[in-house]
Length: 63
Length: 512
Image (cartoon, rainbow over all chains, first blue to last red; front, side):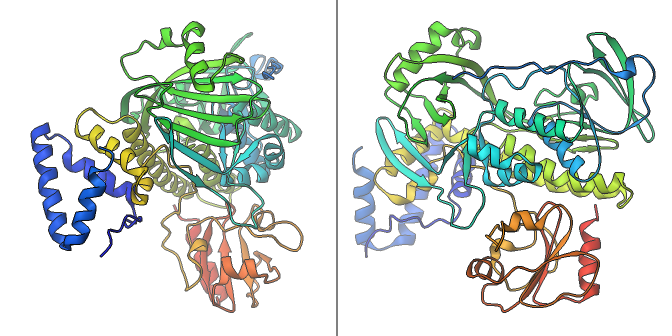
């Protein structure tokens, strides 16, 4: 499977606002912990090893 | 070429000598919204009196981006074509991160609309055109008339007005406060103006230069010429360019406004020193609104009712949306065709519109001015990814440009194109002569397509069914009947309608 990098969220602004809202008020360490849990949850949802490898590569690119 | 301000003549009002008869409507504020309101009412047969504490059009470009819908409204008021001819029409926006273009968008309107997606035109030109139009319509414009007190009585309002020749009293059945973001009337009434103040400042400047910048909107995140901040460049007519520069919260606005501080910053944006500074101001981001826009006989319209942060062109355009929703209703109340409760429909619809504008503009503000920590981390991650992956681009938020909102109407609907559903503005389309927006006019109309409609005493528009009209109004259906309000919002639609159904929908449109 190929990683989908095309727009896949219908309401990007709404999602982004929800994401920030979930973090609001959290100390930095807790925010990082929540992000880590979120990555693991989403990775499990994707499941496909090939897709996850590509996602890791895209996230690392240019960093 | 810088704009030459011509002061309007102050004339001593007759109220200084003897009490004036009670006015039907007094509009306070002759900015674009107050003037548009007066003309809209005049188009519906109600002559308002307009008071303004000043005697010139706006200083500085201020509201510059006029949306397609606003241009359609201005066209109905008689200044639309002039505004488009003078203005800079644009449709491409480019977004940069550091010195690299991350992506661009094209607001390319489909064919077959009279008005373009956006026109940049300084607020002072729009005001100038509206003043001329108001004068043609014999609207009483009173310059240097400052309202200093407002009293709401049982069924009328009394106000005290200060002029260069002293003060006088006026009475009116209705007062419309179009007196801007710092609305003195709102203050005098002690109304709460709830919302958010963002800890952010922008410097805004008009410069005059012979440039060859494209007619496009350019937005930079963290540009090399202004590290860590944001910047926006817009082209306006007469070789005037608008530049907005983010300053951050830890700056002194008075210091930042000084030419010796502004000019070097702008030199870095445009890459040379060959320009003239025309106007400069510093503003904070605020997102606030009144809880209600209708307060018995006093009505709030435009910035007096709601303020949003910029970058979505939602201030001026939002105000014209208010004018559009109020004019036909108030005129009907004054002419005895509707009960005052119908004005609750204005309140409901425009509070809804204001909330949509506030939501979009506060999201844009958060993106441009993220809090330190996780907000900034996500913002920077989005910008980083936007250069590499399509999905991140719609997350980049440099302002979501004004679109007319779709009012949530509980009205008869049918399996017809979604763009023309009840609550939406009826889409424009070319007709054999002229345009759909022109044919719909200023009253309720029945748009009858591919069939006949029952006789009801409502004006009928029955255009030839071109491909474009089929696409925008019929889809796969052979026929339809649309009931369209005086503000060109679709009130209801059917595949075929009986007289009773249409009358019921018409009645529902007047409900508050």
